[in-house]
Image 1: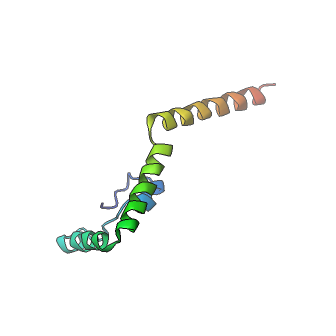
Image 2: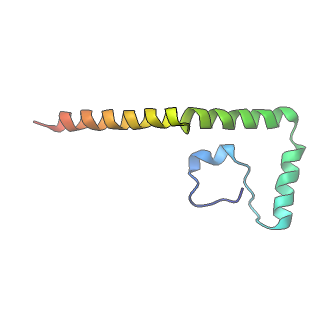
Image 3: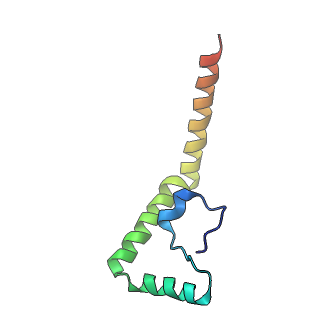
Length: 81
C-alpha cells in the first residue's frame, strides 16, 4: 500500500508498504511478499488480524469511547471544588 498521510502510524507494522509507487516498485513489493515463507505470511496476517480485532472492531471502539467518557467525568468532578 502506498503511504497515505491519513493512515495512522499505529497501522505501520501491519501493512506492506510500497515505497516506490511505480510499476517496478509494486512488482518489487509483491515479489518481496511472495518470497516470504508461508509461516512469515501467516504470522503477519495473524498479527494484523489480532491488531484489528483488539483495537478497531466495534466492541473495542466502544470500550475506548467508554474509557474516554469515564476519564473525562472523573477529571471534571475531581477539578470541581
